[in-house]
Length: 498
Image 1 (tube, rainbow, N blue to C red):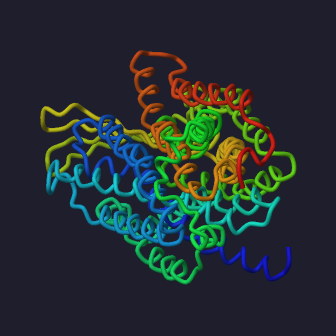
Image 2 (cartoon, helix red, strand yellow):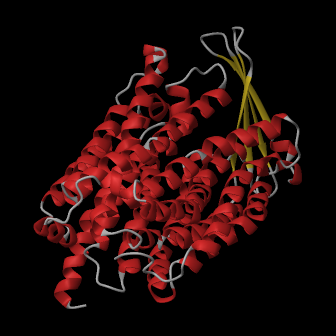
Image 3 (cartoon, rainbow, N blue to C red):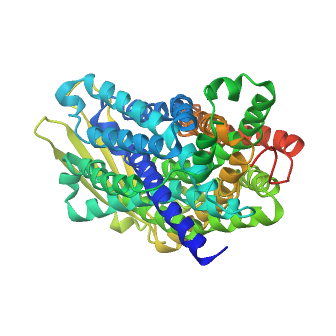
């Protein structure tokens, strides 16, 4: 590559990555604040049901992503990559800002969760059109033989977006008191996205169209019916199905297990303090993110298939041992309490609810706070637990999450180049977007809700290792994908088209 072409591709990467990162930030800020949001937009009579409802609303945004892929993918193949993913950026940013403006359930009742659901669906539609456009745009600018490396920069944006969402939440919590954050401060991360979206829009507005698409449009070879050519053509449909069941389905569940489910598991199953989880997860993501580039670059050298399949296999074999080790770090039945430091405090609220707070300290530095609330109504009593772990256990969890992030980088780093190379330019946006968003949006996006339900059901059934039941879903999906991918995917980087 010449110096000038390097400069040109970096400009493309910067514009595409920044916008995509902001869209992921917008999308994941909801999930990062799921525990808080469950108390704001849903009835609080049953905290577990409220949290599951929040995860279901979060998942709804994923379910509609394939429809966004079809709608915006078609536009991208007809009018161009650039203008399509500018539209998705504005739709995502506007929806995110408005979620931060919705009054609570106590104020407007069931209208609150309904409005949240509508905006989550709009977010899902926008994200469905964003990724395919950004990945295609970068790949069509990348030099031959380096598509894995250059598109892997786009792959970092999902993790970076999640990382920034955690950092913004932590910063907001540090500036505000706990009461202010719970009252209104949780809305700030939603509002902040407007500024980032505005900056990204201005950058993207000044970019040129993809040279591959511009050439096709000039020659009159663009598609007039991308949907029909993508899915009505049996030959092309075969590759769409192979991309879904042999790659993106497994990649989706590994991604969400290694990052999002890990966060949810530590907060809701292990009961670790939310800010502590955000901090240690942020470190693990920061350490793991460069490996997207490493595996994207490596896939140019040795092929996409074995890197992606290797990540899935490692996840299948190691998830249960990893999560068992994670759970053991906060298993207080294995710790020794300093009995003389135990304290108990009881207070009565203005509503005559009685709150009993029990604090315990353990010899390894772990602190445990349990709040039992007896309501002055027919509402069932509630118990919440918050655990602060010691620094050694923090680093143990950082390592265990980092290992899961490595699996993510293996399956996700090469996937954009893999998908782009499967389909011809005139229907590429549409063809690659659908399997990607079905794999990630449906198989991956449903994972937090399904896995949390499995854990909750197993716990109620009295299973000793209930906390591992949520892993059956990603293990089974990844196993099916691994078998199909190993049999039918060619390791050559150019499966069908460039």
